[in-house]
Length: 356
Image (tube, rainbow, N blue to C red):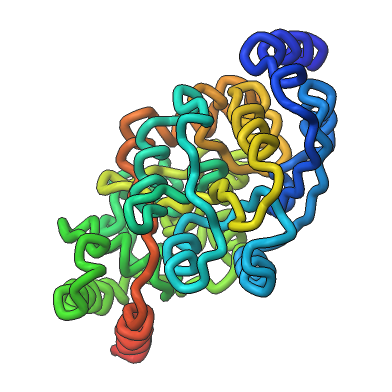
């Protein structure tokens, strides 16, 4: 299967990109996360385009710190999460706008591309496009908790005492959407946001009797679900799929009100020197077969349309069962958090924890 894949990739890249002869070779200095630029993919890109790639692994905090310290120098393409773009750009000017005419938008899942463009727009300019994404939602033992289809279903009587979730902001956000509220729409109005948080706080206090424990780490969650101590939880998609590999009854369920999604993006640092190589890399890795290779290494899916057809058979089956196209389009993508809101959330969570 690998040889067939590589042959088809060679045809795709030669036909679809034609990059090697279209521009002079450059060195692409890529600031990214582990798994997002696998050695095999880098080698294929270098062979196709003539560009060279220098990969520096990092995380959100380090990316922003590096680019802020240099005014956007030292790298040609970076991959911060979408909620780390508008704020740092407005404050520090560390990115340059995207030239969307140089990106093959047909390769992207449209809803993800539009959401990322909206969340990374500053003064009318788009600064980011999506790459790797993931969600939090529900991990459910479907044989024992079939009624749990949305966040507030964790409060159902038939799962009393067998539920777990974290006392963290995703729980507040998820419950709000499940209650018919839109917390993201209230981000610009602190009073309106507080009113939403107050309602969710009351719901979580009422729901405390259903909670076996508030999990604090991934291993704890996995053990609770594997042992049967809990039968429904809020957790990440990859955790649900990992549990599904051990027990077919346990899987990730996209909530009816929408999974909560994060996206790691592509952005151009303000003083990057190899923009063409950066655009070539974006178009190369967003090809479905290349994107599938990245998913198999990174574990998370990409915004490449159709890439789920090119991942390992087990992961493909789990993803497609959890995320029919309508559920992908229903994901609620985290926008940048305005100053002060996390303090409101923290106070509400403290009150939930302290309540009898």
